[in-house]
Image (cartoon, rainbow, N blue to C red):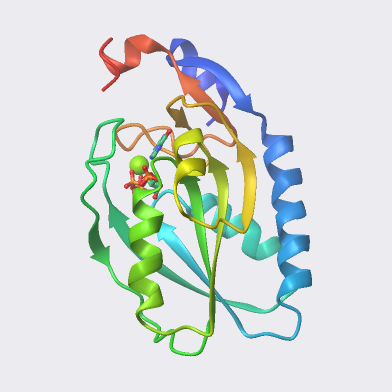
Length: 187
Ligand SMILES: O=P(O)(O)OC[C@H]1O[C@H](OP(=O)(O)OP(=O)(O)O)[C@H](O)[C@@H]1O
Ligand code: HPA
Ligand SMILES: [Mg+2]
């Protein structure tokens, strides 16, 4: 799927594909340096993190295991409900493992705050976060995101895993939607 397929639904391209791919390589290099010689477990947060997880994992030189958790707080709207639900738990016991949570976006920070306290209670050897995108509200939260791709403005974004009502995840870039797609009320 590309810009042409989106037609009038796209307001603008915020981060082009080439910039995303360059940033993924940068993040992978930092992670490689920090986890050298360690047994790394990447925990991807479904479904938004599938693209960053797939690209980041392949850009790493460090051998890494991959597991997935599915949580949801947004439903089909553009605002977090604040209630995080586990839809799928990890298959792996993370006790004494070096865990790196891989996320597409920290927006309100509610999902990751909840996830960090949930995973911390399982006593991993270490627990860090890599998020491709971060919005201003999340910066205010007491949340230590060690690896951040891009700080972006407070706009609802789509593409590269990010959806609006389950659509647009398969765009190779990150963009913003035209207001008419939201039905004019911001969701
Ligand atoms: O910082 P927050 O305000 O909590 O928002 C960030 C979370 O919201 C989105 O997931 P969503 O719950 O929409 O599920 P999805 O990944 O399946 O789209 C996104 O993928 C993050 O996980
Ligand atoms: O801006 C966003 N876009 C898509 N999904 C999201 N989940 C939190 N924030 C966003
Ligand atoms: Mg979503």
